[in-house]
Amino acid sequence: MSKSVTPQSENYNTWYTDVVTKADLADYGPVKGTMVVKPYGFAMWDLIKETFDKMIKDTGHVNAYFPLFIPKSFLAKEAEHVEGFAKECAVVTHTRLKSDGKNGLVVDPDSKLEEEVIVRPTSETLIWSMYKKWIQSYRDLPLLINQWANVVRWEMRTRLFLRTTEFLWQEGHTAHAKAEEAEEETLLILELYRKLAEDYLAMPVLTGFKSESEKFAGADKTYCIEALMGDRRALQAGTSHNLGQNFAKAFDVTFQTKENKEELVYATSWGISTRLVGGVIMTHGDDKGLRLPPRIAPYQVVVVPIFKNGESQEILIKYLEPILLKLKNKGVRVHEDWRKGSPGFKFNEWEMKGVPIRLEVGPKDIEKLQVVIARRDTGEKQFVKKEDIVNRIPELLDSIQKTLFEQAKEFRKNNTHSVSTYTQFKDVIKNKGGFIRCGWDGTSETERTIKNETKATIRVIPFDEKIEGLDCIFSGKPAKHEAIFAKAY
Image 1 (cartoon, rainbow, N blue to C red):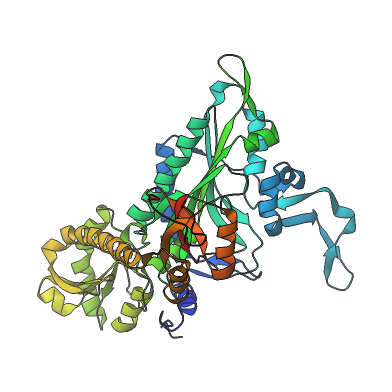
Image 2 (cartoon, rainbow, N blue to C red):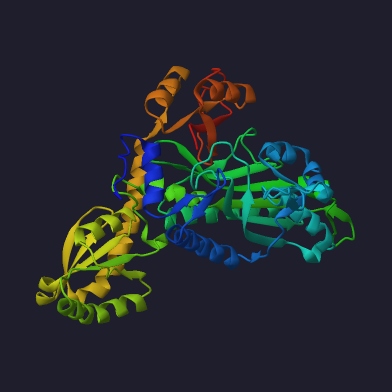
């Protein structure tokens, strides 16, 4: 089967699906809208997970696990929350099946649940029911808990990694004694998300807050990191929510203060998901497939020995063994490809999988005491002396990480447009895409009309907004915010 992918310029959506499936990241599950994450794709997610898990543990958070099933009545306790998720909820009504007498199965009507349960779309309601039991005093605060889990949102239009019926994520849920502590927590997590995206995924992001219509259902304020993909659409890459006292009120979660007064706690929640894998693909991928940032690449170096017979293979093994041992001892993730087959076939496969460095060695290289190194990001090849390899590889990995980030940053810069009229706005959205910075009067009516007419939404109101002298591009009124609009996933 051919490993080639559809060119991005021909059909970006098909290119994306080709890369996901042909690079062995994921496959379609048997239930419509579900995804099977294959080992190579899961290795990427594992590295992202391990990186962020360390970040939150270093800042005092701990992991726990909460049930998959939520009583239906819990969602109804927070009106805005249930309204936001009602259309996406999967509902369990019965507990078992029975034979229909014809080699088939039907729902056993006698197993109907007294109260239907929801398969978690997110865990705020369940977790806050538990926090009511666990929090009594100021001594119990802050409570800083995260869980790595799966969630189910019954999406009608799905896309591997970006939007599937079931996906993997982390969701943090914290409780605090004071409003300012909850706000500090929300912004701390936002900064960790920025650091994860930029320093590890090499994905430049804008940080700021969401408009009222785009914020999380049940939150007082939602902060986010927003990235620009290769097709000039926006991707919401992570969100951090200040929930105020909304869930504490809904579940009557109070604590005894130092002054022996009873007060409601303040809450936050925050999450990133396997969507980040899709973000990496679309930020860095090219017509050959993936280009992976070294820090989250399952294999940082792939070794492709070039040999024709058993004798030269033994010589290659002896030549490579001490080099690779030293690299592995330095923490470099190395994979050796000793399979039979042409070098060209292997080169194409590992380019498809986006391995940052390909190390080629044949009999002629052994004679010259060298190796050939190929960079996936630039395609550049270079000859490196045997004694220099162990020091050169880490330097190249750092260079590739920085190059991918700078390339993505330059792409974003070239596709961020400032406009002052609605005519300009519509022209950019229709013909160019990308981020649009412009004035917005702050009204939901203007936001809704722009969305209905152009399909563009406010992705983020950036922290560095400049509104002095700015007018709304739609209403012409003085701008309340400088907003970033884009079409999004």
